[in-house]
Image (cartoon, rainbow, N blue to C red):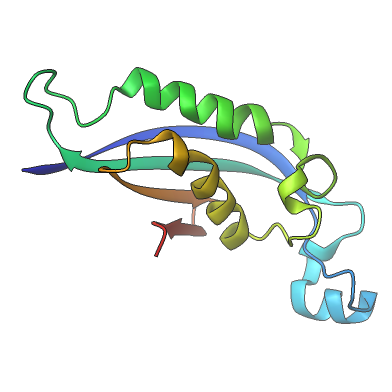
Length: 136
């Protein structure tokens, strides 16, 4: 029997959507107000979901205390109250769109989760705009 367990977290971060190889006009045309050269911020909500068999010994799919620690170390400590473009190495040459952020988070968390477990990351940039990634 496969069960999915999830943990919510959040972080606040600033970013600017733009491509260095495009003109300011083209960046503004494509990314609109999100290309503001002075950046803008979001209160990101994160859901980390792990799916697998229930361990008959513990009754857990994954220890939620361990999942909490992984999220804190790999996401909250790395992204919270940061300017993603300037302070997070993964976005030095990667546009920090919600799509790219969710893939970066997945790639940071995946090695910390046992390989027999499935992982899905859902990232809310706003209450109505969100993305999900499961490594596929």
